[in-house]
Length: 153
Image (cartoon, rainbow, N blue to C red; front, side, top):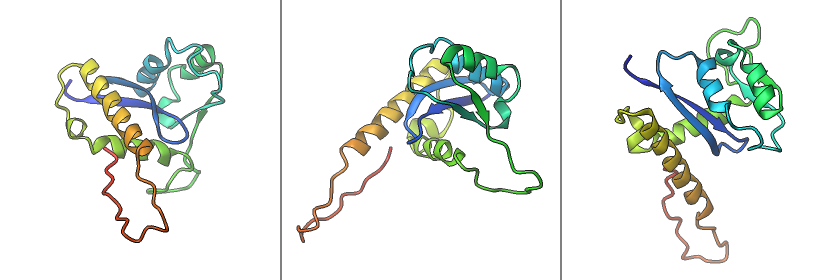
């Protein structure tokens, strides 16, 4: 099967915490299990894992409870709603995906190996975090201050 599926674990600020790259024909819940397995004790302050409806099948809720010790909350579309509608918390993940997609190596599927693709996801995330941390603060007193262009990735 051609193509890859990227499953991201981000915090409430949109910072990448975990990433898993699977074949495009892999079910979302199977990719989610691969993302969560072996993470026991890595996130002691985690209160809940929020997912969309694609991760609702396959017993992922039991895996999340066993590995992370918190519930799996599935964000569902309101009944009777048609077309696009912004979901309450999902925009954080969508923003992270969009910012990571600005990286040239992540804009297309250039990598042959899934591990290489995952490594470039992590590198792009580190770059994004460093650029956020080193952003130039604005001094309101300085009239000669000019904002430098800030590219997230």
